Image 1 (tube, each protein chain N blue to C red):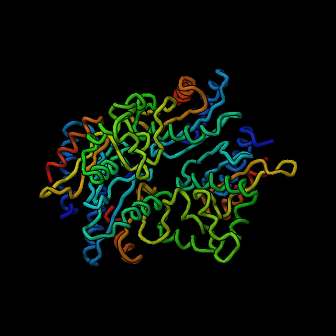
Image 2: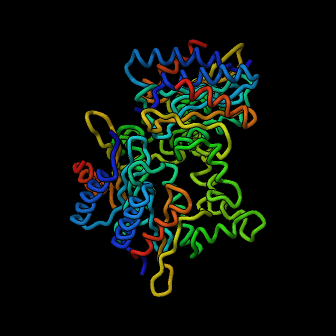
Image 3: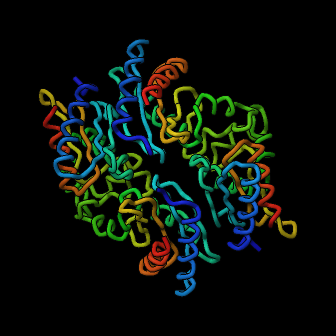
Length: 132
Length: 132
Length: 132
Length: 132
């Protein structure tokens, strides 16, 4: 049961609300079980460089069934996955803001958020994922 | 006065309604005056190959201030712009479904639709643009 | 119910058998419902330039729920999808050899074959798809 | 005497068996003496982000006649090959899971495994290489 557009909209609305609370406009993207984009929004004033990053974070979380933040810990120099950020045509994001979406124990999609600090991206992604 | 997220949502909702009327699920994308993505949705069941195309159509329409359908007429073999579809890293779409969004005589964004025949994409894009 | 590795192997074996019959070594690829690669084989002596094409054909068939041959008819100059072959980062193949795999009315994967003439690729893809 | 499809299948079966033993589904790829893909499988449930990585690991091992793990040691910041992961269009993988396949003292292909921790990828790749 992959993420639907209705699911994606609910996730995005929740994420937007959190972004407003913290006063930082964001890009928010949702992908389905195949890693394919379901929906994306860029709040007014959010960084244009974060369009791609929000989508990459969502893709990465689904592609490896992991929070991008946790992948990042393993992708530092001398760690076991150092270099992973240049695989997959550069689609792999290794910093906070991407979270898997789980249903009945399976990862069926992911949300990716980009537009602020790692901490800000993370809290907005968490708000989005909570609405799933 | 570039396209806002609120504008993009109104455009997308109108386009979705038209897609439902004709019974063909679509990808719908809106870009701003800088050609940068503001929002994208993929209706449930719409082609995953059309995610990229909807965004490319929107980008192309803004990038050249033209309907992609009209650009296509000039991009056929022997025509003046033949080959343009391989420029800009492959982001140029030369078939129906992309329309500029105009305000006070200036192109301030564009909508791109992909998911059906050229005719279907075009009518859904027109419905979206009309809501701007 | 997306294509499994067991499905992919059965499809590939059937396609290989047909390739042997016609005496033309082939690349054969199978993707799942998300367009992601499940399995690929290159028969000894098959063109190395066809590795990528077999995967692209499979991806294209799933991405647009269509046989690549039929997409190709619409992708010729002056036709409604001319230019589609340069979208999606060049992953779109518009010649014979890619077929959707359908289960209960839904496209749940695709097979792509490359290594010979269009006619040869097509017959090998058909043999593969028949085993699904 | 490059790796044949029959060799690749034997290697892959052995690698799959080891992946089952350790309970972690994997992507397994085999390339020939030219670095070109001979076969790939993704076990059900294995990460889709690891499709590309398994192929890159195999390619890298053949391209430099080295285990990717050993290349990784030389590709860390301040080491002699730091930066190599962004060469060759991003195809160079610098973490464990890629092993050269040797016959009569010559590297005639390579196997790449991705889908778990570096240690897991490595043990599965070793099982595959042992079957050559």
